[in-house]
Image 1 (cartoon, rainbow, N blue to C red):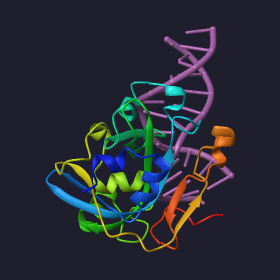
Image 2 (image 1 turned 90 degrees about the vertical axis):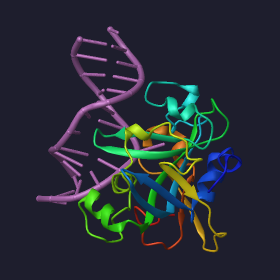
Image 3 (image 1 turned 45 degrees about the vertical axis):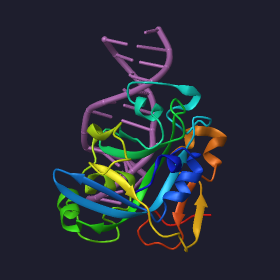
Image 4 (image 1 turned 135 degrees about the horizontal axis):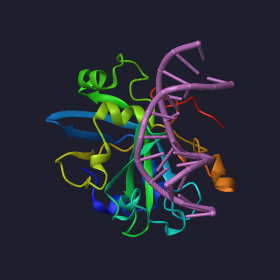
Length: 196
DNA sequence: TAGAGGATTGAT
DNA sequence: TCAATCCTCTAC
């Protein structure tokens, strides 16, 4: 299981480091897991981040916990998006988990997502939370115990990591050009075809 | 308190 | 290309 020191690093470091690690949830007594294949880093120093300029609201207060906690929020009124908080307390940095490769509990994931077992089952931030059973009630939870959700360490990644621009943050101006989206090069499980 | 918009998704 | 869908935030 990944420890506190890992989560205290810069979000881009954590975003890269999470690739190839296994995200595990145990929700409603059911264990599901998947290998993280795509992430995005968000720092309070740039406009794409909900905590830009240390902006604290009821929605994003979980972002200001210490690294190693979950930040879950609702997007477009429909989807729950799961982030891993990084850095010291009060920083407001996080890493969005955008896609996983399903490993354990694929049947229950299919049931939750009302989808077939294909490479598209968890290929997007809104889809993977549904498959893993992650909801708004999990925002603020610690990822550093094995009660509800955590990240299993794995062997050092030997595949290539591709860095591209993040998705859906055109409003962030020049910060939208930061290549802070990281994915396992060539993986069929990522949310969208690779760019640049 | 009203109004605008969003770190998405799936159907057309 | 566009609608679904509703919470959050900002302006007044």
